[in-house]
Length: 181
Image (cartoon, rainbow, N blue to C red; front, side):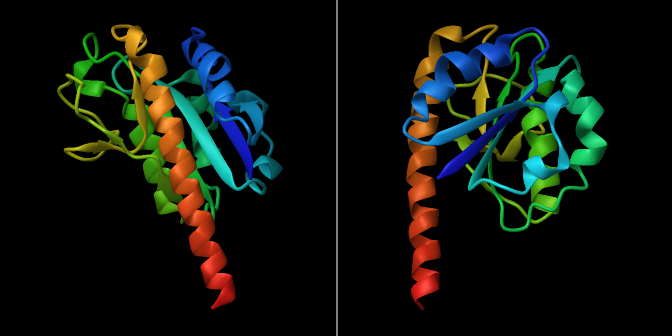
């Protein structure tokens, strides 16, 4: 299993989450980490799983590197690709835009044929609105609030990575069964 983790970070919080938690918890998988501003078209043509990391800025804006890349991102063919998304947001200061970036990226992936795994429960969060919602009970991906709940970050990431490993295993088993049929 090869994983590509693509993220953007202006203040360093997303970078910190990637380096401190996510990379270590994805062991034993081979993970290639790329920052959005360093992407090339061929970066989307490989890997079994793509993990996207995005903080939401201000009033539901994309992080600056994602914003610069977004038009190109919406043109990527995600057919046959499995994608997981995590996002950082501030559920108190920007309660009506909490982790909007997750939803903005998820909708582009789905529109272009991709499969999203790693939906995350909304239970335990206190926000007004989010474009990151699949429905009232789940985000498209992991929601992290380093501003107000940094004490929960490791626990949330640990559970999410375990969930991803389970979902990856189920997808692999399903694909193997299709090949044998």
